[in-house]
Image (cartoon, rainbow over all chains, first blue to last red; front, side, top):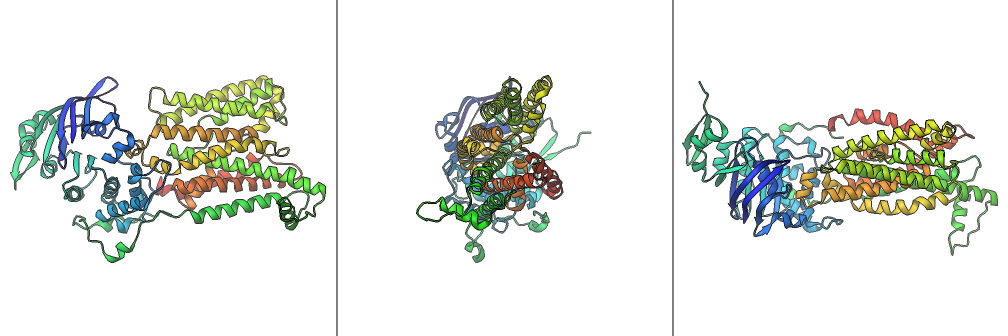
Amino acid sequence: MIAAGTLSVAFGGTRVLDAVSVEVGRGDWIAVIGPNGAGKSTLLRAAAGLVPYAGSLRLDGDEVARLPRRELARRVAFVAQAPLLPPAMLVHEYVLLGRTPHIGTFGYESARDLEAAQRALERLDLLPFADRPLATLSGGEAQRAVLARALAQEAPILLLDEPTTALDLGRQQQVLELVADLRQDGELTVVCAMHDLTLAAQYAERLVLLSRGRLVAGGRPSEIATEALISAHYGAQVRVVEQGGTVAVIPVRRR
Amino acid sequence: MGAHVPAQRCATATRPRVTAVSGTQAARVLRPRSTHGPIIGALVFAVCGALVGLLIGPVHIGVEAVARSAASHLPLLHIRSNLSATDSAILWQLRAPRVALGALVGGMLALAGGSYQGVFRNPLVDPYLLGVAAGAGLGATLAIAYGGVAVESYDLLPIAAFVGAGVGVALAYALGSAGGRGTPTTLVLAGVTVVVFLTAIQTFVQQQHTQSLQEVYSWILGRLDTAGWHDVALVAPYAGVSSTVLLAHRRLLDVLAVGDDEAATLGVDVRRVRLVVVVFATVGTAAAVAVSGLIGFVGIIVPHAIRLAIGTSYRIVLPLSLLVGGGFLVLADVLARTVVSPAELPIGVVTAFFGAPFFAVVLRTSRSFT
């Protein structure tokens, strides 16, 4: 349902994405991995309609660049790496903003929008926080609020740009488990840029490895999270250990 | 407001699951905060401000006389005014237009300030940020220096100020969005550049025509003295259209608060919203400035006070700014014309006098949120 064909993005003459071709099926969970500057965020931002691109990038056959902004927003929810959280905005007001693509330009929320926001709050256990200002939330709670806003959007595709980077290990697990829960009915497609290879391998069904703007490998986690590929593209020395049906990537100190 | 609650309350190690909602939670139905209460309160404030403006002056006219005289203007009531012709003229040709102008200008400046703060995501920018004031100042100075215009002449001066304000903002906007994407930061920097440049020209012209110094100065300090309803009629259409458009954008300004990218992924055309809001806020401000000069601080004090006291959503901030800004400037004008009576203080001095301490308070109270 998401199909990128020789997708390229350039900023001021520098190619950030270089002829990337990848397909993501309905209900898949793909983790985009790669070293800093590999183009992970740019790939997600292109799919969210935030950067101009060359090549093709289609959602269910419709070119992203030609979709009206509002229509795109009904299909794709995007969670940025460091979302701006207006400190005094209340949690439920923030989550309601997710309904924007369903509300007329100068209109106001209908009962249906309020219900959708309420469902999103319930689903992320945020009802007790509904009337609190965003500034009073902890990092983990804030990340849940951001997810709730994306969920209220009711888009079939969820793009997450490094959703766990700022969180401690426990909160990282919480957030990824939440995403796994949200996918339970099999409708939600998740594309997620990630730094932690072990978590990426545990949660995603497929990994896509980008390096210097190029797609260098894609496949099941055990095929991609290998010592050879990681050392070649991250310049890291690691050991990959099979553990309970998944793999763990352990950094090894050079001597 | 906004005491930080300790974050540890979510220290549960269990992940949040898709919950079976408990009874108390299910009973809670999400509803956006009602804006009716605050709007009614602000309306009362504005009406009281207008009444004070009508009642206070060198000639005593009582509440009842004002009320009777007002009622006598209404059809079908057949109430006769008991005011003398002179008092009636003072009330309806001097005080009332001045109150109306103060309400229009104050409301417009506060609403435009609140809107600017929304599109630039900065609670401390004012409606003069992008060169409205500097452009209008230059236009007015040119009109006074070369047009042989006295400040009391109402022909060329407002037009020159209005055109100057428009040119100033257009320059800043073109400069700020050239090459880049017109982000809040580039626009603010462009505004600063244009302001410095236009102010330099204005100062130069002023120095070349020292005989006009006094008039330019008095214009810059701002004034609401008006001869009848002429100025009110001049500003009203611009203020009306501009207010309508800005108020229509109040929910979109809340969306912009979460960032340009996020707003774009929520389906909002960020650049267009920013352009439309800036254009209409500028038109309204320019019209206000054209007849009243540069009255400072209203555009910052009023929206900011509303944020501190009532809430930060633009759904509340914008309509309340319009009403409270109007009432505030009318009251400031009452002070301006009574404190050193029979002389008058420039109204800009009054607003600045309240503006400076206000900022001190804001700095102390908003530390936790900035």
